Image (tube, rainbow, N blue to C red):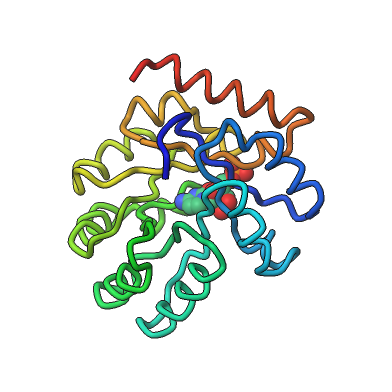
Length: 215
Ligand code: C5P
């Protein structure tokens, strides 16, 4: 995945023509597009291939199963054009190792602490352990909450060298600058871009905000 604007679009728009229009508007700005069940269920899995012709696609299926099922899901995602997948860690080391193996060099990003308030009830208690396990299993990176930027720093300390992707910017209350200043390598933004009346302008403003931090 390129590291240019450090912005990843979460394309949870379920109106398929609108989703495609939004991606066309912003694909020159973003580094990748993340898709989740809402768009897959609306458009069908072919959407992975369609989008992969325009941008790197991260399939956010939050995979959390036995190793064999994890492998089957990841193989199908990769076959359709995914360049990365998002998986849970609570299923344990064997599942996570199988995910990395099945991805065959594509990126595997591991959820540490969920960004919504409920993320503090269970995931936050194990986030650092999840991060260390992700590093041990050969994952590319971690998902850490832009809604609690101080947690990004802590999680990063548990797995130095792994990329940090942070959702929760905008609609969930987090700030792109705070996330990046606390260690996020990329921010993931959904509704603030695809729900905007001018998605291109919204994406460009976020990209400019990140660029102004001067890497
Ligand atoms: O619309 P919004 O910017 O809140 O979208 C955030 C995206 O990131 C959604 O697709 C959501 O499922 C995902 N996500 C998240 N928090 C996590 C992991 C993934 O918000 N911890």
